[in-house]
Length: 248
Image (cartoon, rainbow, N blue to C red; front, side):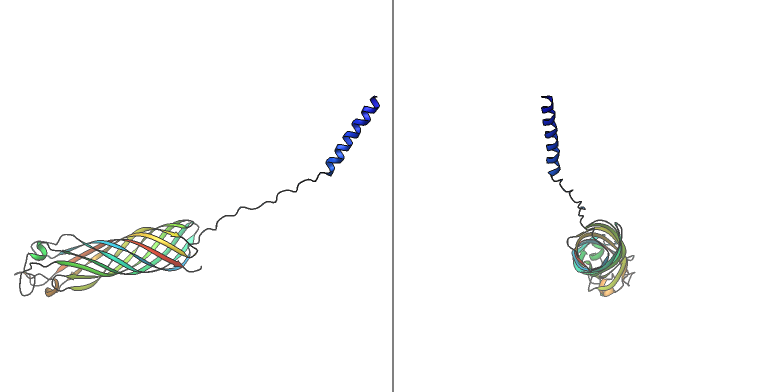
């Protein structure tokens, strides 16, 4: 009997091993490398359009006017224009230069005693109803930019030079070009392969211009027969823009 049980046990073990050998071993799952979204390349040349609003201020001063000056008054209006620039990217840092030329319609006036309380023409007629008016019809800037990019988002600071037209008017007016500086910051987002949208703020400060035409913006007083007005002007710009970046 013991021999029968031993023979049966050996048969069962041998049959199990043979059956296990017939079972196929599953193939290993192939390794698939993870797919990462490509990092956006901010480098290259771009062109675009921009538009926004300017909130400015102006002050007229004349040493011969006993009132002293006009006080600061608002010079506001919209602007729209074109942009061109180029960027270079080093890892997450973006360096560039950008220029723009905008048509703008910034205008404001003051009717305080400085402008209306004295004889205001070479004929010494009353100055009642006259306003000191400052107007700008175009603005151009050229600026450096330094930013830090998180893939499709770029935060940047910018600073450089600025030029603008200025027209000072009391009777008719006298036009000049003003020069100054600008600085600001912005955020830009790449919403497609070659398209970006931006929002930026710029402060622009211009050197004072002189208005020396007695018949246009001068004050004629018994002891002061020559106009010598100094007009200062600055503006805060808020702009949005869309740029097209050429293939690097």
